[in-house]
Length: 291
Image (cartoon, rainbow, N blue to C red; front, top):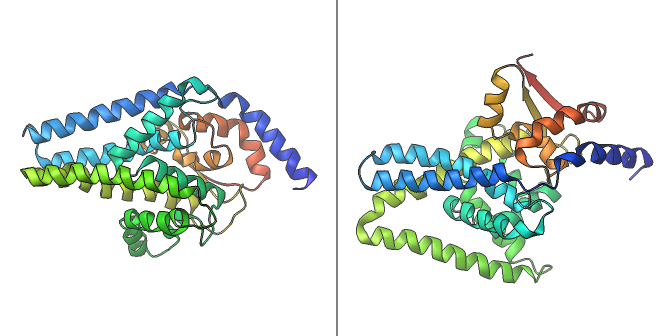
């Protein structure tokens, strides 16, 4: 690291310091609101109050949203620097992962690997999305679930250089066994349509939406490992900006997350505003709309 690079990093750290370390109560509220909404949709659909196709759509959107609390838990952002709340951080991670069927510890291992190896052809699990043909992008979004499982066992679980991963792998296998056993026995007792429409279907659809908006677009064209340019910002100005931010769950400021992953997601836009001069000097990829 050169002296100039170190100076830029210190300046950036000074700027973002006020945006880190707090207990992220908005993330807690979001997590339990989505968990409750998922349970409500399932109840209404099973009772016949709403049709299964409506439950499929609603739960797919809810699982898209639940990825954000899961993601925040992976970085310890729910507890922040207050270790007294780490139990809540992990609880939200486990519950969010269970609903989304992306087991918390497995997802955390792969996501942190994505941060360490961003845009690496072999070691970044999200590099599966490095394709340009729209049909290929669609195919890879809808095959991200089996690819993630393949990547986890090939690069993490069975990595002889990391023997400690075997303990994590045992936990992950046990967790998936429980989750899929629940789905299996519900199906055996006649609820296979509900399981498919309200859980497994939304799992695949929600995962495809997540990987497109949180991995493909933010890293496109996936061509550099330079931390200031490996991830994009899509800034929407004007009245539509606030709506766009919440629809995108602030991942349109994905560069801020990669540079400073301990900032809670709902503070990305504010941190971006203060960091803008540094980002411009570093040639960061910032795309603006509605100016």
